[in-house]
Image 1 (tube, one colour):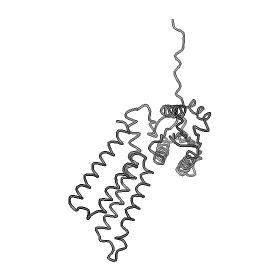
Image 2 (tube, helix red, strand yellow):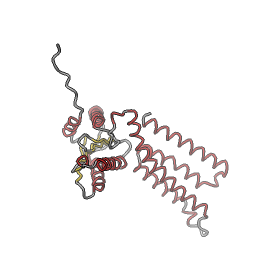
Image 3 (tube, one colour):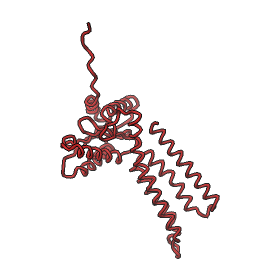
Length: 270
């Protein structure tokens, strides 16, 4: 199963479940329990955003849904008698549900994306980081450059380097833990449509579709600072951003540098 199919399955199942709960609520209480109905309906856009864009967008969607729900409760909040225990419980439960669907759901979906890739394309996943490896990074970069050349579809690439590289640490457990932590951070701080890969030399590469240089620089600064915080005082972290519109030569050099080396089958035959 591809992630797009999984995304459609989750959204479809969520829509059916939410529709069923709304129907049950209407059948039991009619429109008198309209706050609960609105809370249930708002779960669907939060789910869609989380599944399609990942944890960070899911968090924003959950916060927005919570704010809208609280605004709708202003009449009850300002009433002289205040809120009943059931109304307080509904508000607390709704906000918790938005957070669970938006944050936890978005994070799980971000992980599932690479789990599917691991099973469907086992040669494309890096064993330590569980994100794409250099071979897959070369394929993704080549595809992005081709789409830019044909259709003018913009994209940017962020390269994160760490000095010293985690690979230089003599403790295998420490190396693996740091690599995994960096990969998890990068994966959790980008959109679902973005791609993360770990190169053979230890650098991380992030491909940002439909992103111009200005947007790419902002993402690069944010990702670099996040990885720097993971390292603390133990090393230096640098980030570079290349955009298709302005850095074609640099992207070409990067693509050539990570392209898998073809075996040399030349030779004389008897």
